[in-house]
Image (cartoon, rainbow, N blue to C red):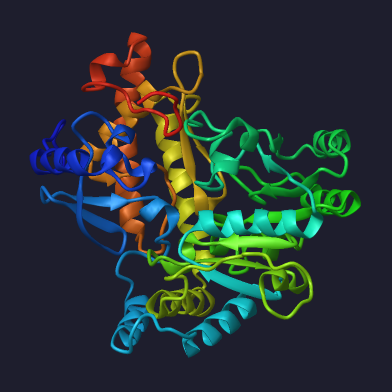
Length: 441
């Protein structure tokens, strides 16, 4: 696509049909058409590698694939081969499959800081199970989560703290506290203020910024001193930071950690992992109160576990994490150069680890702007780039990166015009995109 504007009639029709049957028009809020410029929310037909095609026949270079879950690229041959091998053998039985043995052994070999693992289908279930386990182990009710991280679970203990708390009792939300990332003093003050009340500290070990020196080790010490469980949400950092996640890269071992997203390359699988002493409370070989840890009908589907094993093998044998960093570094450098060349380097910012890049769009006053985000996304789409973020997959080629940078440069030229005019409205094509978490539709 090279035209200044383009039309998506079939996508618009499909979106209307979705909204008539599916609340929000998508099964994930972050995939909603309100996240894209008006009339330019493509409905995907299929994907291969780093490319996807919409139902109107347009091809895009895709970033942030599957909300960061597809890190190898769509329809990856090694993953599909493993999945097909299991499909002919049955997917779910009345007793554990031998695949569960193999998958657990493979995971614990990949994440050697963990002693036991239990699989599920989504990250919310795994992270909520970690919270429940921490409460059972400590006898405490409060949960402290990192306020700087956008999402942990669809369950009440977290969603009640967002701008969408409708339907959640205040009594539940009051049990959840928050602490700022990177600030050990503030976290210690919180734990002191609520002495012997906090069951766990929950955070992403790394985000769009690297952890300050000594921060994770300091948090480990704080958790030990105050008797609470340290939980790392490795949904994003797992595999993208290292095969063993951020804990493997930074050398700080949590009590519990949760993995998902890249683990299945698009197939539904997540994992709760951690210390045997804690994890076994959800098992049968102990004398204490039983914890209903995770018990899901489809948690151990054989083909999803086969996909996870194939992903781990591919990462290890093909050096995928290093490739993601190389691709991300090339992209970040190109985008920054394009933004600088068009005079918008202070308004279009690329942030994060090379394997997990995001971008910020700032207005004339250098404040975050949904209007300028809309302008930027619109120009990217017109150039055949579908990029709610700049999170790379291993399916990208150097040519894909180069084309993306060319399209970004064209988008930055329009960005400059809007800044000079002091008003991006003429370039929006309709209503601006909206934040996922908001009180009103």
